[in-house]
Length: 475
Image 1 (cartoon, rainbow, N blue to C red):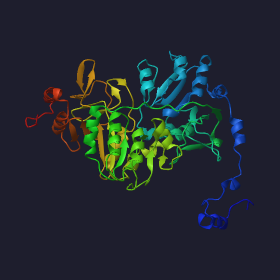
Image 2 (spheres, one colour):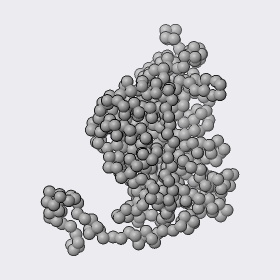
Image 3 (spheres, rainbow, N blue to C red):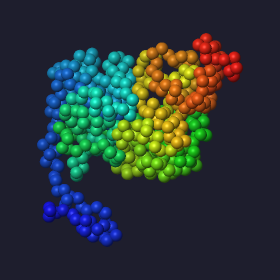
Image 4 (cartoon, rainbow, N blue to C red):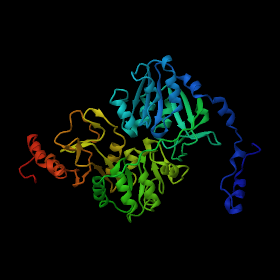
């Protein structure tokens, strides 16, 4: 036996009841490995590291607030040496240097699995191409279907055990690493350390090259809820109960729900969500969230990524209350449904009178992605006592015109994010309707009942034209 090994007897002698210390032995004595030598051997400048990229490669940039910056700039500087390099990211929050360096796509082609504001603007100029995914399946795409040559990932600095934490974008990071030929890390001391869960960190032994950077984590600008958002939020609040397990999407309306919850007297709420947002911090600090009634991950706040402001990043940093898991766990409908009373609250772009939900495009224009809306709509409904709310304002302004978000048929080219068969509750500022179990004519009546008043009569006429309105329907 190794002379510095810790025996079971040593452990009992050193446990807190004996000496008031840690339950665990001092592991530096058990595993006296110095990973700094390996770190230095793999350390390179960004310009040196990106030499691993070859013409024709698929290169991954990571996701959300953790997408690389210095490696992106270094790859852009190699523009004239490379051709047909395909890059994938997810909701990048700053302009990719490779796009700025090559606005005609002659050397680099940028792709995204979920468009944020920056990528949406690039898509309008054919400088960003969308890869549709069911979010809970995304790790499997990389492990089974998608070619990946080089992965660039921004990470928290290495710990004493040789691990680099992925920060607040665990999502599909490990799947990226498992699928890649080469792994290049961009170590950033500003990256929050986000505890797991599992698959939240990678060991130095798996890494090809390491670079160092020091840039501020992008913050999501606060979204101030509108009066309509608050009206919708108040309707949802009437249907929330003690012990509910929450998922919130992004936007003014979910923020309004979070603010109302923080000021409510609800008790023992749980959180099992895809995205950790600012409003969760307020709810937790207000004492609304304990997780005590969850069936799985009890007492834990579960998520797969976080986007927000500085208070959110400070809250999740090294916080054992928050557990980051890969998305094929957090968003798996069968995992979601293991908790009772799951409540999913999400926004959409438009809906037709039969209940088809479009949440990711404006006609043929891709503006975001499926995200986890499908996952949580299905998972919440499968949950014992669960409810899934899809919300929107009944109308919106375009120029001087008011346009209905409820239509007889979806805008040509609109993507069906959630099929009519899956929709549970639909909410506008005018009310809440449940579509499960309704015939086509009942659906038409229900959906039109929460439309903007200015459009109800025209929607009824259109419903009659397409044959989903009966003489007995209520106007």
